[in-house]
Amino acid sequence: MTKNIAELMVDVLAGAAVERVYGLSGDSLNGFTDAIRKQEQIRWIHVRHEETAAFAAGAEAHLTGKLSVCAGSCGPGNLHLINGLYDCHRSRVPVLAIAAQIPSAEIGSRYFQETHPEHLFAQCSHYCELVSHPEQMPRVLELAMQTAVSRRGVPGDIALQTATAASPRLHFPSPDPKVCPSDEELDTLARVLNPSKKITILGGAGCAGAHPELIALASRLNSPVVHAMRGKEFIEYDNPFDVGMTGLLGFSSGYYAMMNCDLLLMLGTDFPYQQFFPRDATIVQIDIRGEQLGRRTKLDYGFVGDIKTTLQALLPRVRQNGEGTHLKASLEHYHKARRGLDELAAPGLSRGKQIHPQHVVRTLDELAADDALFSCDVGTPTIWAARYLTMNGKRRLLGSFNHGSMANALPQAIGAQVSHPGRQVLALSGDGGLAMLMGDLLSLRQLKAPVKIVVFKNNSLAFVELEMKAAGLLGFGTDLQNPNFAKMAEAAGLLGLTAETPDQVRPMIATALEHDGPALLEVPISRQELSMPPKLTLEQAKGFGLFALKAVLSGHGDELIDLAETNLWR
Image 1 (tube, rainbow, N blue to C red):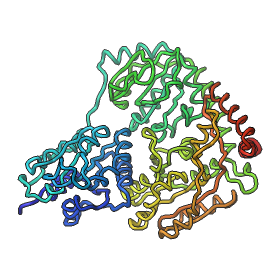
Image 2 (cartoon, rainbow, N blue to C red):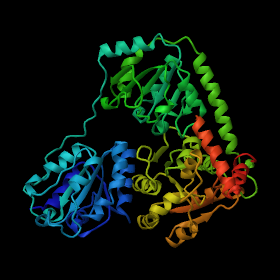
Image 3 (cartoon, one colour):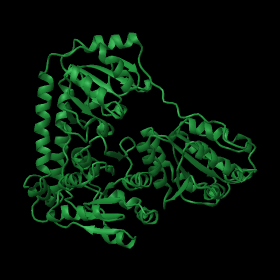
């Protein structure tokens, strides 16, 4: 039976074990969506905004490691994909975006909704091509899929033309290569590591799947292990060498362990903040991507390899480090810092009706399932997730950790839930982030996706205000006049709850988790909650003092009182 291009595309995707396409229907996509309608293997996941589709596809790809697909109609439809696709591209997850185009005969005529996706998507893709002839399919689609993270334009009229090929061309499974430095390079690395006494490991997302090897190496080197945010879910659990995070979201023990080492070993991380790297230590980096070597700091030795394979080959060459002083001091520092953070999450520290976000996230962590899937919005929700969510090897954590986009938590939770229907999915949303893509609360109900959302309602862009204070600026343009999110959730068909006092936090979270369907819990929290970085610079201290002076002189001294009540008198 003769097939059109759209039907051939669906066959190719189905042959690659694609199960879902996230998107929003539009006339230029009609041929493609109709082809999906006619078969049973691939499900169309209908969302209310294309940005949500891209974030959701990225979440599925992150959790499964397999190709995920999103689609947008011509012009504004596929333009809405771009922010989510930037996040996918920077997180290096395998997502294919199908960007429909206007009728091919009209391209170049300034036609209605005309854009040029092959140019627009070039910077957020590894492969981006326009399909303008039936003979290009399925080859171009298969090339895009082989490139894994890909963005391309497909003219809508081409999708309905007769295909010149009858079936997919490629039938082999996805390659799974092992990459390791040469024996000579491994010998060099061992010669660098073996004499060093104060080694700290900094691990990132590249350590995924290498937990046993990482722990074995840390034990052999007597090395504390610091993790970047994207490495948290892969490194933190069952790790007696863990000393927490560093960076703007971390705390002091990770910073201490890095600044007091004589050798820093970077494993699968592109940690971006130069001010948190030691200046005098020898620095060694191992990464699967050679272009990342030395990108963030001065580098003494760089090696290309995947972490699991490289450590397996390296371990027989590494001698046991008999010096444990650095590890002991780093662990003591970590336990002290951890106690301080845990004290801030204690329910008894809340005064009156004031709810602290640390207590909320610690309680959520205690009540969530052992294999829960978490997503967190950029800003303060990411800080609390970094410090108070416990990873255990089964839990997963999603966020816009490289791209830093607002409004990611709800869309990523949608992708996590529809691709993992038996798992508990929890979104930590800021009030600013949720408001950006709040229309997709409707998607939760329509998709019957039982996502649980916790909204941190402080009526402000809180992290932006913290940055302003650190720069000595008064808050401006950060006020949010919010609705009652719980009632809006109810209007959308969700269970809507509000925890108004500290003693209501635990029972309300429990009620939300027990609900058979999507639920939203609104938690009013203090606007003035501070989250101190592990390293406070002189400039930041001066800036905060300048903010305090400006606040008093401009008649905003009440902000200082609120700051003290929230952070000192608790």
